[in-house]
Length: 214
Image (tube, rainbow, N blue to C red):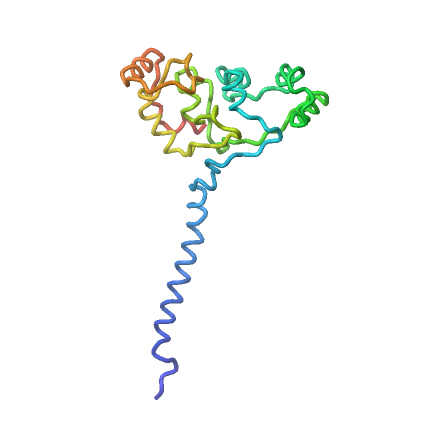
């Protein structure tokens, strides 16, 4: 009696089953892979802002320290943003007619804050305190890169958990005197100096889950 299906049908069925399994596995794995890619985190991608604020000009040309604008970085979990009042402290006299600063002037006179676009964003389940890191000798450049060379700020670090843990497991070799945390030109130093700073500031290797997940 003749067979109902040609000989190649077995191969076709096997290939079909393999394609379904592979497609299902790929569909499940793709989101997990995507969220771990630099493209998802927008690494090295300059973020557009409502005002063209150039860090290069303010830090290098004008010599403004990071803490002048981010004035809560040493005392609070967040680094803080400058109020429009602070911006207008200079720009009521400097470039006070510039079209580029029209958004700043409108914000000032309307008493409404400028809504900036976030560059470095951690998940809601992650707790991060700027003040703890800054007071214990972690430089701004360690996480944010050379912001003083950026026309528009972008993320340079992955901010992944393994990246954070690399530092938490061995913080001693990555520290500087707290007075130098905003110094973007701070040179590499003898590891023994970093170890001495760690001891003097009581830096600990905090790797338990509750350090960041509370």
